[in-house]
Length: 379
Image 1: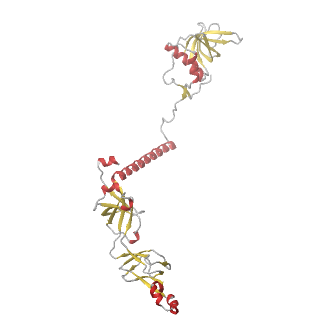
Image 2 (image 1 turned 180 degrees about the vertical axis):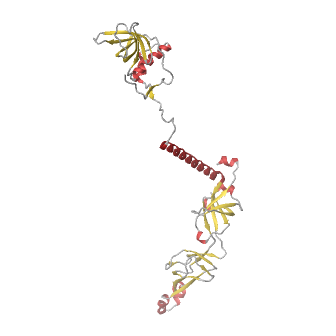
Image 3 (image 1 turned 120 degrees about the horizontal axis):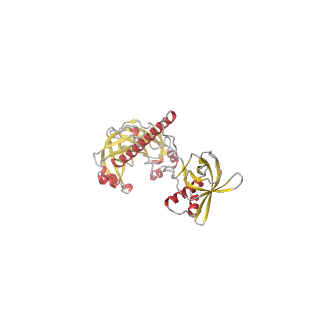
């Protein structure tokens, strides 16, 4: 006897097996000689049936084929089956049989007839067609995984659990950090290190020649550069007209060297023009930081953050690519008129003045705040 597929379970299998019912049905089969016999069923269940053998020569353990007949009003329904005789009482003409190799459609039809009979309903042809058209079976539940994990499976389970825990902690930390930044920190839109500087301009047109390197300390009156300018630059039109023609050519060919001197003691912060270039009168040549000028932080905040900006308030500062932060205090707060009054300009004095190498460099500015309940809702 072949066994049914172990990976197929009927939708009601987990509840209980049907008890045998006195359902009126018959089995039609042929003997070895080809003679047809009709045998009446005594009772029927989902797994087998009992029958009155009549004069059919059944044998204990024999395997037989036939058709199971059901009457549906005026319609007769035939279900091909194969069964095995598991219990046979010859003198009482009774036998107990078990279905063999039933396919899913046959199982569904049998359960339909039994369920309808137990419920007292009549089976119709529509019921049979509906049962055959829908999926009545599901895959069997897996039994593996209930035992103790060992070896690689245990390591994989522990690693998966640890990985999930790490991801959860990371996500929680990320969310917490963003909430903290949103509700308890006010950050500047942009900020840089700035310093008050003296602009050194060209006193005349000509070719510039530098005499000192940038970022070098100079004394007041020290020569920063020379400008080679033609004599015509200093002569007015009336003066040129008064010069005799034979002397005019030699006069115009003369070149004057004009000295560009430092207006104060300080440091050349930045050169605006390159060496050996032609400059015009009034063009800015150098940014000179006079002695005593201290760099500060200039920060731009959104106008909506004006509630958190006050003179004397402590702020946290940090240069990019540096982990260490330092503090400073707000010196002035003003509205930036150049940005259509949509931002606030804040001047911050750091606790330690930055070096001149930080001037014009970016800096992060953060202010801790304690928002009210309504301030949180507004955000």
